[in-house]
Image (cartoon, rainbow, N blue to C red; front, side):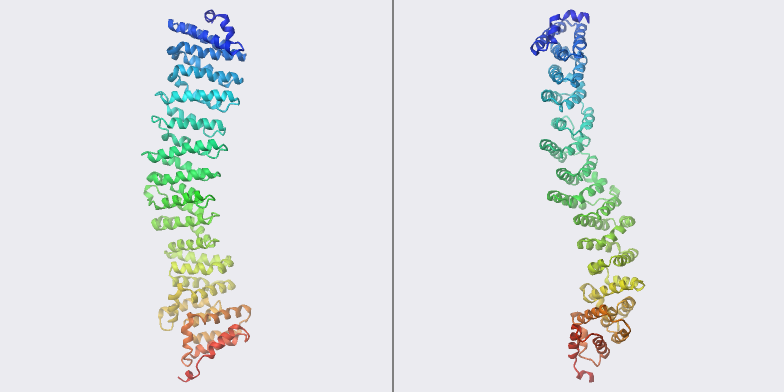
Length: 615
C-alpha cells in the first residue's frame, strides 16, 4: 500500500476526493496515466496495489466524495489498462457493483458511470459478471432518483449491445435470473425485463422461444398492468413470440398450455382475450402434443364462450369447434373421463351458452367413445338428470338428447324415466311448465310407445294420488294432441282388433285410472265405448267438484278437434255405435246446463240423425 501511495502524488489523491467533479475528473486522468505507464512496463503487481488503494481508501470510505473519487478512479485505471484490463477485472468490477446499493444517490450515479466506462473498455470480457450486473441494473431501473435511472438506462443499452454480439453469453444461465424477476410489480422493472426479452429474442443465436415457458406467465401478468406503455410492450413481445411459434417446427406446447389455461380465467379482459387467442392458435398448431391437455383447454374455453366481451366469445367459440373437430383417441392420451368431468362442472355454469356447449361435448363423446362414457356414467348421470330442471328450454332439449343416447341401454332408460317422474313430483311447477316439452321431446328421441309404457308402469304404483292425477292428465293431453304420438294413437284406435293395440291399452289403463277424464279419453280413443259408458256411470259416486268440471270441459272441447273426427263420423250411425251415444249423453248429463261445454256437446248431439237408429 505504501508503494501505491508513493506512485500517486498526494495532490492527486487529495483531488480524487474533492467535492468538485472537475477536480476528481482531472485526478482520475492522472491515475489513468500512471496505470498506463505501469501496464506498458508490465508491472501488474503495482497496478494491483494502485487498484487496492482506490478500493480501500476511497470506494469503501465513510465519505461520499471519497467513494465517488474511488469509482471514477477505478474506471480511469481500466482505461489505462486497455487490453490488459481483463486480468484485473474482478478486482475492479466487484467494488463498483457493491456501490450500486450505496445510500447516496450520487454515488450510485457515479457507479453507473464507472461501470459504463469499464464496459466500453473490456467489452466481452465482462460477460462473466453479467448475472450480477443484470441484477444490479434491475434494481437501479426502479431507483428513486431520476438521474440514477437515466444513468442505469445508458449502461443497460451498452450492456445489451455487448451481449447481443457476444459468443460468451449463456442464455441458459440467464433464464433462471429472468424467471425469478418476472412477477415483480414495479413498472420500471417490468419495462426493463420486457426490454431484455425483446432484445435477446431479436438475436437469432439465442433460442428465447425454447425458454418461453419460463417467462410466459410473467409476460401475461404484465398485460393487466396499470401502465398503458407496459401493457403495449408486453403485448408486442407476446405477438412476436406467437408469430415465431407459428413458424417454428418444434414448440413445447404442453408447458405453455397450462399457463394459458390459467390466464384465460383472468379478471382482466385484455389478458383473457390474449390467452384465448393463443389457445386458439395452439389448438390449430399443437396436434398430438396438446391431446393430454384437451381437458384443461376445454375448461378454459367453455367459460369464455359466455364472456361479456364479444371478441372473447367469438374466439372461444371458434376454438371450441376446432377442438371438438379433432378426433383424438384414448390411446394417444385423450382422457375421456377428464373431458366429462369438465363438461359436468360447466353444466352448473350460470351462463346458458356455456351449459349448451358442455352438453354438445357430452353428445360428441357419446358418439365417439360410447363405452368409455358409459363406464364413467356414475360420475355425470346425476348432474345430467338435474339438468332437466334447467331454466333454459334449449338446455333441457339438449339434455334430453344426451339422455336418449344413454337410454339406448334398458337399465339407463328405466333410471331416466324414474328420475323424471321423481323430478316432476318434487317440483310440480316443472311438470306444469315443462312437462309437455320434456315428454314430447323424449318421445321424438326414443320410441314413444316405450316411453308411455314405462311411465304408466311407474305411475301405476304412485302413492301421491294428486300428483299422479296431474301427470296422467298431462300425458293424456300429449297423447291426444301431439303429432309425435300419432302412431301410438293409431295403435290404440285398433285395440279392439289388434293384439298390439289391446296390449298397449291394457298397459296404460291402470295408471290412466288416476284421472277420470283421462281414462274416459283413453276409452273413447280406443273405441271401447261400452266400457267408457260404464266409467261415466260410475262417476256419480265421485265428488263432482270444480277440478272435475274443468277436466270435463277440456275433454268436451277435445272431442271437437281433428283427433276425434272419426268418433264424430261414427255418430252418423248411432244404431251401430249405441254405446258411444250413451257415453256422450252421460257426459252431457254431468255438465251444468249453463256451461259452454254443455252447449257444445248438446249442439253436437242434436246433429245425430234420428233415422239411423233404425238402420
